Length: 150
Image (cartoon, rainbow, N blue to C red; front, side):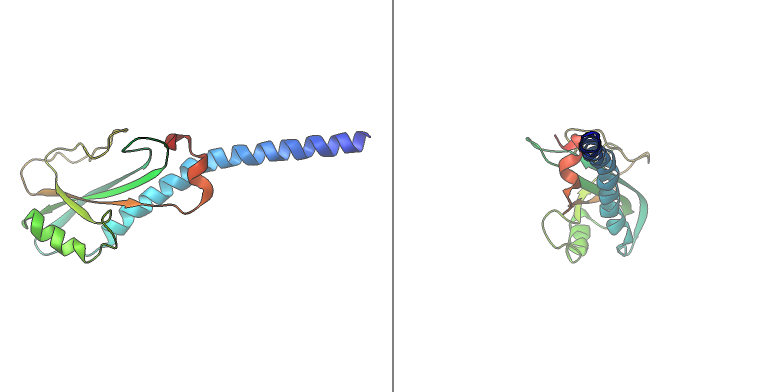
């Protein structure tokens, strides 16, 4: 009888530890996925007359209502090209509407993010700065165990 109780307690503790491991690992996995989203943008070739400045990323419930994890990655560039020229350039790297979106950047704050603070570290002055951003995804189960998505 003692062996049965010991096995049941061991199975219970193992199950609890596995659940805790998911809750601990989920933020790390999701942050890595957001970083990969930004890295993909940083790895794209730059158009002429454009320089790469920096990249940022964030995972969590970032925009909209309800529950759900979102993965945001962005790069800051400085370019002599117009917003329309840049959008046309990056369009060829975009598989959907949420990828490689170009917006003028007038401050360090990223205003598209509603439920968290995200900023570039660069002091942005002038009208030649642009943010190129993408929304990533994570087809694993870890999005369900990250409390930042709820």
